[in-house]
Each structure stands twice: as C-alpha cells, then as structure tokens.
Amino acid sequence: MHNFRKNIGQMVWLLVVLFVALGAWFVWSANGDFIANPFNARVNMEGIGQRGAIYDRHGAVLAYTDEYGRNYPHAGALAHVVGYSGMSRAGLELSRTFTLERLSRELIQLAGAVVFDDDVVGNSLVTTLDAGVQDVIYRGLAGSRGAAVVVNVRDGAVVAMVSTPSFDPNTVHDDWGALLGMGDSPLLNRASQGLYPPGSTFKLITALAALEYDFTLLDYVMYCTGHMTFEGESLQCFGGHAHGSVDFMRAMAVSCNAYFARLAQMTDPLQITRTAQRAGLFNSAIPFELPASTPQFPFPAEPDTAELIQTAIGQGRTLATPLNMALLTAAIANDGVMMEPFLVERTVGAFDNTVSRHSPRRVGRVMDAEFARILQESMALVVAEGTGRPAARPELFVAGKTGTAQNETGVDHSWFVGFAPSCEPRYAVAIIIENTGGGTRATALAGEILEKALR
Image (cartoon, rainbow, N blue to C red; front, side, top):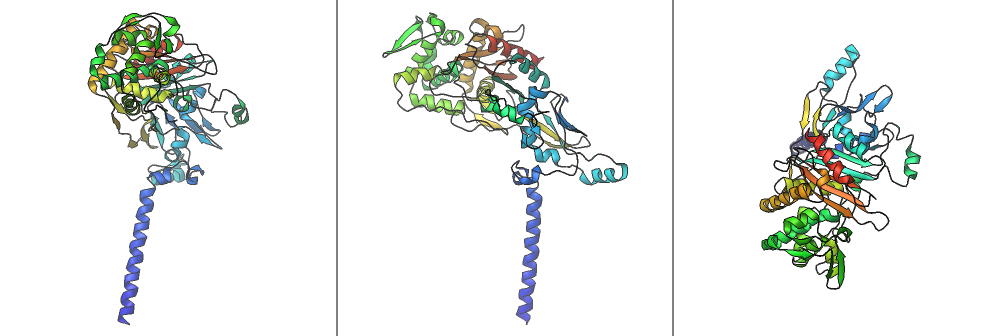
C-alpha cells in the first residue's frame, strides 16, 4: 500500500512538471518563429482589435486601417514591399502579420475598450523605407518594366525597393483576375525575384577575382581595337568602340569588354567561381524576409573560351536580382563587409512604446578591404570620366558601374549599380530597366535616387 501511494505521488509530480513544461513551451512559442510564421493558420484569423499601421523611417503612413478596411496612401509605389492585406496577403503585410495583429499592454487596452470605448490596436511597424525615395524611383520607372533597390551600406537597411509595373493594393482583390492575366506580371516583385543577366556590372566580380588570384594583374595593360579574337571566339566592345591602351582603372571607366575577357583568361576559373559565390552570393539564398530568387552562376570548372569571355562580361548563364547587386555594391562601399538586408527598424505598441528593435547583422567579410577600396576608386572614375557620367550630381560624388545586359527575347536591358558619397559611402543602389537598348536612363535615374536619399 505504501509503495502504491508513493507511485501515485511520483506520477502526480511528473504530471505537474510536464504541465509546467508545456506551459513554458507555449509562452516561448508565442514569441517565436513557429507562431509568427505567416503560413500558420492562426495568423490569418481575425484578431481581437484593429491591425497595426506601417510607417516609413520618417513617420509617413504607408498602411493603416479605418472603418472601411486597409488603406495604402502611396498605392503602387510601395505595393510590392508593403504588400496588401485582406482575403490574401503579401509583402510585409504577410511576413509581419502576427506582429501587426498582436497586442502590446493587452490588459490596459482591453480595459480602455470596456471603460472608455477605446480602439484596441495591434502593434505597428516602423520600417527602414523612405517614401520620398520610393516615389522618385516609381516616377522614374513609370511606363517601363524594371526595379530598383537602395540600401544603407553600414547596416543593411533597405531604404527603397520598387518594382514596375505595379498595382494598386487598395483595389488588388477587386483587380485580381485582371492582374493575373497581364503579360507584364505586375504582381511580380522584380526587385527581389527578377533574375537578369548582370551585364557589365558583373565586371566588378571579374575584377575582384583577378585581384584575388594575382594582385599584379592590377598593373596589366592592353590595347583595345574594339574588336578582339580569343582563341577563335570574337568579342567586341559596346558599339565596336576602340578604347586604345587601357589599364585596370581605365578599363573599368570605359567598360572595356576585351580587357575583362583577357583578365578572365589570366585567372583560374575556380577563383572566379569562389569569388562570385562569396562576394555576390551567387548560388546562395539571399537572407531576406520577402520572397527572393537565388542568383545563379552555373560556371564550369573548365569552361570553354566562349563561356569564359561571355561570363567575364556578365552574359552567358549568369543571373542576378537587383537586390543581389545592391548588396554586392553595398559590400564594396563598406570596405568588403556585407550586411544582412532588413526592412523593419522597430515594432511600436499602441502607446508608442518600443516593443522590439532590429539589431543589424553581418553576412560577413566578402572581400579584402584593400580590394574593396580599389573597386571603390575604379567606380568613382566610372562616374567622373567614363560611362557613368549621367549619374554625376554636383557635390554628391557618386561612384558606380554601368551595364547593358543582352536579352535574347528582345531589346537589351540597362543596369546601373553605385553608391554615394564615394569618399564616405552611405547608400548603395542597383537599378535595372528592361528593354531600353542600353543608354543612359538607368544611370541618370540612379543619380537622382542617390541625391534624394542623401538630401
């Protein structure tokens, strides 16, 4: 009998311990990824109160709820990044839906609702976005398919992310059928999901790989006739322009195809692959809370001459997203350190209390600081004396790299990646405009974007 009672007592204590452990797990998971996951059915249920608002970094309202539903004052300019909420969700409205419906100081809010008929409001998001910069990009890309991303080079904050054509999140559910039928895919976020040949912007990777393989290649000089032959494979510079005698810095400034093809020939292909994967995040998932395509670099260990020279100038099978290229550019500007991109600076409760704040995180050092500074100097020369001159702005000191990406299905795309100020970089930008045939439109718009971000 004594043993029976002892066993019963042990069983009771075991049940108590398990109950406490289960309760602790529920408390922990309420703050964790399991509950906050946007695919969890719980976060798609109607909450107790009103969904929280979304703000830009200066306090401008990007999304709010009234008696008629969810509203988006900037409409298409922020549609892909802020998203929409209703019968379905996208963007931050999806990835942060649990945060927006969660109540801080819940008991006080519920008491206020009972006693004073106050609204019960979920937490709000203060984002890293700048609505003014978004609007400049959106207007600049009007009528085109394209995308642009602006990031803070020091902490990885995404200042702007625009994709066109866009849609109106205020009416997206009414327009859903028509949007799905449009051939230019307005629902696609080209900024993080669009994969494009990087064109001559990839010469930054080719140059870095050559320096890492053999630093003396910095002193390599060749004579460009505009048309070159590499082991039976012909290559010409843009427009067949003869650049004459070019060294490393001059070749970057004028975007000499022949020079970078020759650099690639003098570099171990494995070094090019290692550099691309480390510095450009090619073949690796981009750490980001919105859907992002994985950049592709299917480069063989022993490429033939045609693939080698095409890859060196950003053609071939290489594909990158604007977000990918913005992070690479920011890492160059940040002396070789890449920061993880983020969109939400802090979460704010109904009483303006800070619930949580983002801490910047490093992806890691992706290139030596000395090599990064060489690339910085060469990119400054691109804007000062070379193909990037349309990006120049008085007293702004922009650095960058232009690119024309060949498009097998139509007219070529136009790229520009850059940062400013070149002496003490703060912001980096990557922009692509589809089917422009090259030209200066992306380059000139990049200068306007950086000017707005800095002023």
